[in-house]
Amino acid sequence: MNKIITISRQFGSGGREIGRRLAQELGFAYYDQEIVNELAERTEYAKDYLREIDQINPLPLMPITIAQSFSQTIDPISEMNHDIFQRQSDLILELSERSDSVIVGRAADYLLREKQNLFRIFIVADEEFKLNRCCEKREVDLNRTNKQMIKDIRGVDKRRARFYEFYTHQTWGDPINYDLVINTSRIGIRRAVDMVKQMVMHWDPPVQSE
Amino acid sequence: MNKIITISRQFGSGGREIGRRLAQELGFAYYDQEIVNELAERTEYAKDYLREIDQINPLPLMPITIAQSFSQTIDPISEMNHDIFQRQSDLILELSERSDSVIVGRAADYLLREKQNLFRIFIVADEEFKLNRCCEKREVDLNRTNKQMIKDIRGVDKRRARFYEFYTHQTWGDPINYDLVINTSRIGIRRAVDMVKQMVMHWDPPVQSE
Image (cartoon, rainbow over all chains, first blue to last red; front, side, top):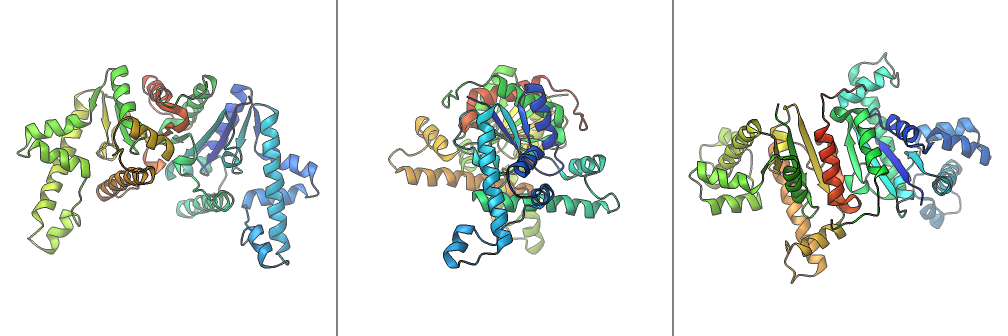
């Protein structure tokens, strides 16, 4: 059975890099931006639109099923975004059947929760670490003050949390929803990769009582 | 410099056993109940009273410093418990200087937060795992229904959280306060021990950017 690693992460914590390195070093398929590209090929949605949706994670005002029970006229943008989420979820399930994989974000830990050989990782870091990393990688607007940049970084996570909670009814980042939560502030990215690699490579059916 | 592992844990998650095995296998000193015994020897408090305090983690109604600024007449029980916490904290600091150690609970992760070579571990598990484990270890009243036992288990964690938050002003179990959070439900206790052991044994000064 395929091994699947899902990586959820605070913005700036190095989670994406951990995912990329894990895939490289373990020889697993890697899915992040790739999911957007594949969706664009399969659907009528333009790649740029999908990329924008992927960045900002907009949410319908209420779950589509509830909206439908109130009225036939649902906000068409909401409906479209919901459709994208649905098709993205189907794609993630399909990819997880194809080969050993690392999947970043997109509530994949929840979508694949019934799978055996699933490793659900969440990466956090303290604000100093995240700020330094975002500056280094130019993932924040360097013209802003440190205080503003920290606010921007928190803003990304707030959107991620809302997206996750909307679709999963679980709390984003609550350790109970993951197998391992790594704080990269002191452990660092190299060690985090090694830790997950060790676990995945030497995995055998879990023995709870042992 | 001494290596110190602090273990915080949800009740029933197997955290204490992980700590005990880590100490055994790494040859570290192990401090849990031992702290109560040592305190009883050093102070005028009776061991039974200290043990009771240790179990229920009672809190002063407000921090002693604030209470003092309002009035000279502080509840003597609160003051006594605060004094115990203070002397326990001093003892933990002293023990951490003595040798490589594993310290379970008692907000040790916070007390020792400035130390180098500190590994702050938090152990969680899902409710089914915790219930099974508590029944197996007879740490819950087996005459109660499953629902009542789950309530009891949650109650212990609520007290732990309140105690931690009172003294540290941090959120108990928030991954940002630890280096590693392990969910034993699927990882299991043996693998959790190995994971921390690997990390501690192969530790060298952290390189954040790597």
